[in-house]
Amino acid sequence: MHKCFVSLLATGTFFVSTIALAQGLNSQDRKFLEESAKGGMMEVHMGHMALEKGKSEAVKSFGQRMVNDHSKANQELTELARRKGVVLPQDDSTVGSKALSITSGALFDRGYTKTMVSDHENDIKEFEKEVS
Image (cartoon, rainbow, N blue to C red; front, top):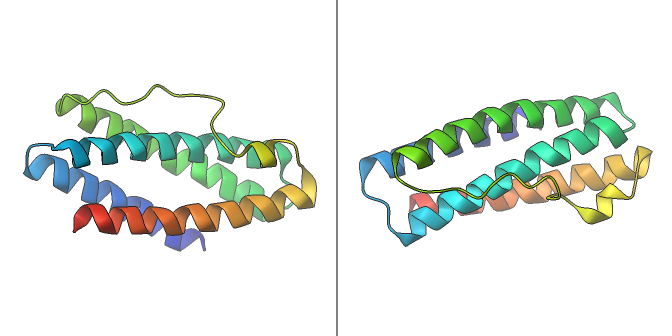
């Protein structure tokens, strides 16, 4: 599961970079950059939640991976957006799943895992849509 998400993150960063550098940004490209930034921030915040509220070491480890990978991707995206004159939304520490914020332990682990799979499946669709 980790390899799939890491691959998606790397592929997504590549596609965003390729699209933005290869041509001028239209409104769809700008919206994609903005939505990608929001999604990346959410991944980082939810990763922190996994570290605090998770029960299993696998969930905590995955949460740390999301914090590390998405923090790096967010920095790269911010730099790309700056070069293209796009102002991304500011980091919002309240983003994330409200339902998960009130759970912990095994219940959190199940909800977090389900949310991450669903979110990354949606991300794949959005990256594919942007590329096409």
